[in-house]
Image 1 (cartoon, helix red, strand yellow):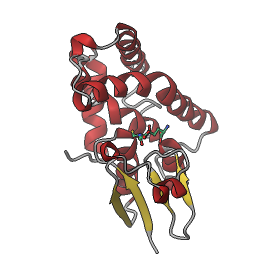
Image 2 (spheres, helix red, strand yellow):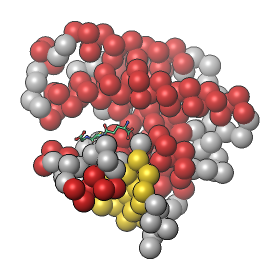
Image 3 (cartoon, helix red, strand yellow):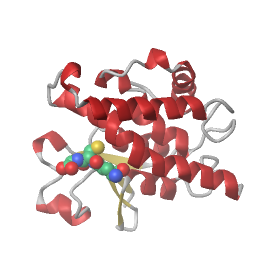
Image 4 (cartoon, protein in one colour):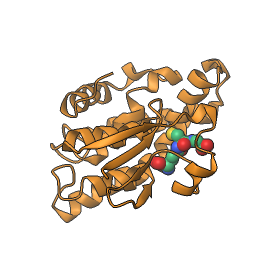
Length: 196
Ligand SMILES: N[C@@H](CCC(=O)N[C@@H](CS)C(=O)NCC(=O)O)C(=O)O
């Protein structure tokens, strides 16, 4: 058996896993799961991930693993996507935890509501928009010191955070207000590489 990645191509959380596997040159099968059709809620899928969410991977030995950032940490173990220095590695984790709690719930959710639920940008909850803008500003400030989020080397922090940041415009955010973020998106897209 080889690695299987269960994901929906509309989901940045799933694409993170794909880009990491591609960058590492891993052999894998991509299994497309349509979350809009409820395919994450079937008994078969919930046997893989009781949380009923993509992404999920099934390792070559049959063990399943969920949570995008947990999966990319596992896949990238020992690679140059994880800094060897303990402090830099912890800073990468700082970004990964922040992404799931303070960025994705606003930047990704705004995009989801606009693109997939048909809500107009003007009708988005102002608190959601304000928190998304704060997250984008936090990224802008975080890019003051280097080319990538942890110094000058691409790490999983960049892979995870670029996933929804590059699509923030679809949720009504104006990326032109964050020039360092825009330049960083282009650098990360080229480094992975990300093909649309
Ligand atoms: N914290 C999880 C979030 C996963 C998640 O929210 N997955 C969404 C797609 S982006 C999903 O499967 N939603 C379907 C559902 O909740 O029913 C991760 O990083 O993997």
